[in-house]
Length: 199
Image (cartoon, rainbow, N blue to C red; front, side):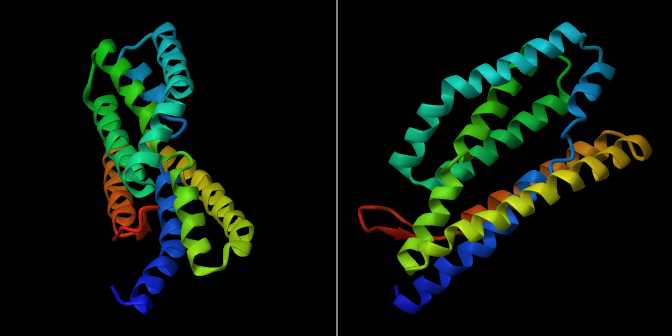
C-alpha cells in the first residue's frame, strides 16, 4: 500500500469518526423505549428490571468487551457493537416476550460496551501515526459537540415521529441509521500493533 494512500485513509478516520458519532447518537428510540414498551403491555416493574439488567450487564461486560478490541482490533469491536445493537433494536421493536426483551437489553449493553473506548482508541492511534496526536483533545472536544447535538436531535425527531407518525417511524429509521454507522466504521482504516494494515 502506498504511504500517501495510507495517510489519506488515516486522515479520513477523523471525519468518519464525526459521522459515526453523529449517527450513533441519532438514536430516535432515546427516551422513548420505556413509553413504547409500556404501551405494549409491559409493567413498570418489568421496565425497571430491564433497566437494571442493562446496567448490570454494562458493568459485568466492560472488561470482556475491552479484550475483544485488544485482540481483534478496535474497528472490528466497533462494528460488532453496532451489529449487536441493531439486533437489540429489532428485539425491542417486534417482541412481546419479557424474556426476549431481557435478552435484548443484555445485547444493548454489550453493543454499547463493544464500542465504548474502541472508537476513541482507533481515532487516537490514527492521529498518533499521522504525528498529530497533540490535536486529539481538540478533536475529542468536537466529538463531544457532535454527540451533544445528535442527542438533542434524537429527542426532538424521535418525539415528533412517535406522536405524529407512530413508533414504526422511530424504530425503522433508527435501524437504518445503525446500518449506515456500521458501513462508516467498516470503511475506516486501522493498523494493528503487529504491523498488519487493513481497511
